Length: 230
Image (cartoon, rainbow, N blue to C red; front, side):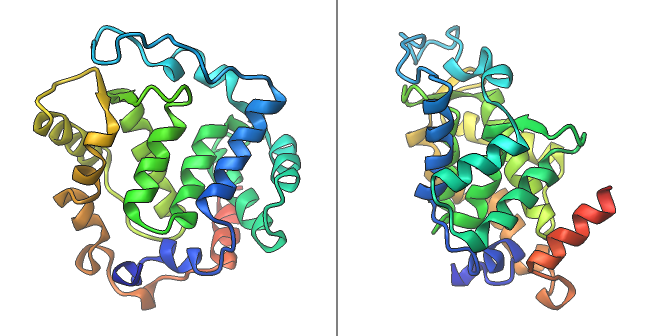
C-alpha cells in the first residue's frame, strides 16, 4: 500500500478497521435474508459468448437495497462501529438520485476500494461480486460497470478519476490481449493484466494524482461532499 500513499482512498483505508471479508459478509447476509440462490447453473457453457452471465438478468431488481436495510445488515455482520458512518456515507454518495435505494453490488464494490489489502485483491473481489454463482466468468458490460463504480469511489474520496473513454479503452485492451472482442471471459486469467495495465498505473501515479497536500483524506471530506450534493 505504501506505493499508493499519495491517494486519498488508501489513506482512508488506513483508518478503516473493516477488511474485505467483512464487506463480503454484507452481501452474503443480504443473500441469506432474501434467499437468493447463488448456486444456479445458468452459465452451462461459460466459454460460449452467446451465454448471458447470471447476474446480468435481474441484477437491478434482486440486489436493490434501502439504506435502512443496509444499516441493519452492517450492524448484523458486526462491522466495526467506527466504520459504520463511512459505509453509510459511501451508500449515500452512490445514491445520486437520493432515492435511498441502490444496487447493493455497487456499494460493495465501492467499499472494496477502502478495505482491500492490494489492488489485485480489490479487482478479484469485484469480479466475484458480479459472479455470485462462482462460474468463474463475467461479461464485458459487468467489467465496465464495476470499473465505473470503483472509479467513482476514488472520486468520492477526492482522488482524480479516469474518464469514461479511458475505462472503455482499458476494458477493450484487456479483451484484445485475451484474444477476444466481446462476451464472457474467465476473470482469473485477466486480473493481473488489469491490475498492472498502463491505464491503471497511470491513474494511480503521483504525476496524475498530484500532491496529497491539495487533497483531504478524512471522514469530514466525505461529509462535505455529501452536503454539496444535497
